[in-house]
Image (cartoon, rainbow, N blue to C red; front, side):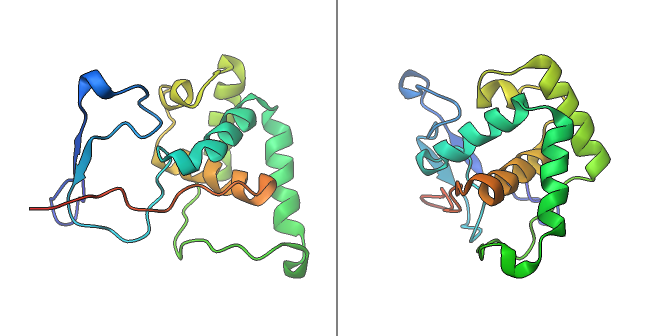
Amino acid sequence: MNQASGWARRYHWQGDNVESFVNEPHAAVCGNQAGQVLNMVATDSNKSRNATVYLAGDRPDEVIKTIKRLNEMPPDGLRLLNLPAAHPVPRAARLEKILSRLYDLKPASFEEILAVEGVGPATVRAFALVGEVIYGVKPSHEDPVRYSY
């Protein structure tokens, strides 16, 4: 739902054909294309989803320590990433709290991570960003919209 315009995309699922709710579940997506979006349910995002599950199972202090190390590296020590202009990441304290909850719950799949209270769009974006920076796994940024009317 775009809160500014009041318009929402319509995601069409055909129950008999849905094999997974986290890997290409849509029969169609109706709406206006939004340009570059984070599409974590695209087949091309499979490695990014796997990295998310791996990160969720790692000790929270280790994940936060790795993120801090990345922040301290000189710019020429990092490879160039082509990220969207705005890639909001939740506040570190909030991210650490969610990482602790995930570590305690030990989710075995991306679908289980999405079912955890407190895991929302900002958390998923943060995991996608960390997975890309640390492991080099790129999520899909292709808009799944097929048609609009």
